[in-house]
Image (tube, rainbow, N blue to C red; front, side, top):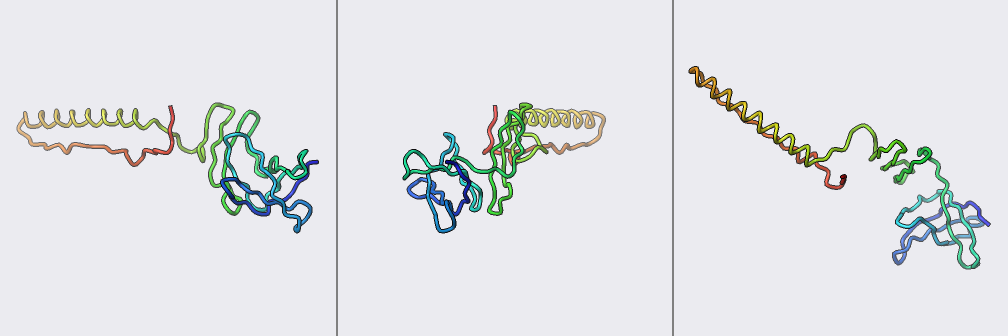
Length: 165
């Protein structure tokens, strides 16, 4: 039989997440195993509603899922998110059905740092070459022009924690 229950407490014991639930009331606190897809490590917040079930072994019950109260993903999509202590979304990665991936929003674009930096450094070199030509031309007619060569450093824009193709 599957029934809903409330999460009472979540903690780690011997590298295993322990989910305490109120099974048949506030006095009936149990610690069932948690069922998750392989490779996903997530912890629910206290007070969330869990789907709780007994197994063929009466000593081993299991939490088979949680009631999601903030569903956004459309057909064919998947969204990973985290919540802060108040239950508000703090971060997300949304794999959309149109082929895009949103990392915590959709206002800005991720860029490939190395090709962007290479292109910008080539532009700086061309600008500095033209400034030299201008200085040569002005001095050739008797004027004086000392160019202030430009430089560019976009290192602060590089996000080492995000990688792409």
